[in-house]
Amino acid sequence: MATTNLKGNLVTLAGSEINVGDNAPSVKVVAKDLSEISVGGASDKAQVIVIVPSLDTAVCAQETRTFNTKAAAIPNATVTVVSMDLPFAMGRFCTTEGIENLQVGSDFRERAVANAYGVLIVDGPLKGLSARAIFVVNKSGKVVYKEICPEITEEPNYEAALCALKESATPEHKCGCGAK
Image (cartoon, rainbow, N blue to C red; front, side, top):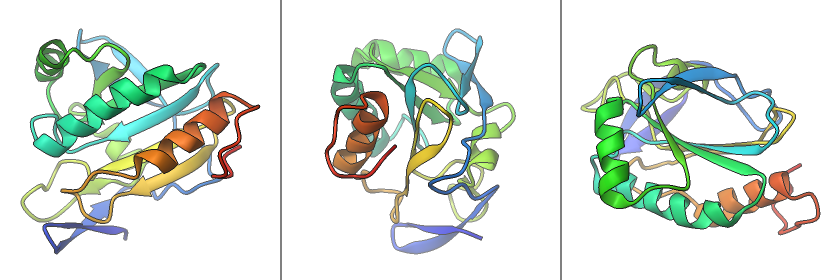
């Protein structure tokens, strides 16, 4: 089983382990308007799936604001932030924070993303939430970048994730991360 840390304490993750080169599972989450949206799988755009424990924490909020700003400038790409937060709370967060360049999806109904991508926390104080992770998926549905943050309370490697997204979304862009 995969693991990560919460304030230095080891926590166990459950679900299917997805790695670079694997097909990204296509799963449904609940949008802020209660409709269903799909993440993963083949698409007409490259995707970054940003998985966070809850938008109601400072680190998750900052991460979402950062992707809202930086990923918006990347053509042919979509960004979806997934958490276990209720859709209503996600909508309120987006309105309050001015989040307009990405979509948010709640995994509260089925925990489909958490299980399909292997990031469901099964012990410790955050049991039942998702670990902090990023998956970049190219247009053909392959995972080209994966990061499960080694410490849940710390932000991800934005530069590496955005490089992989740029290389997947814009074939002529080469920043050296090796994404295809």
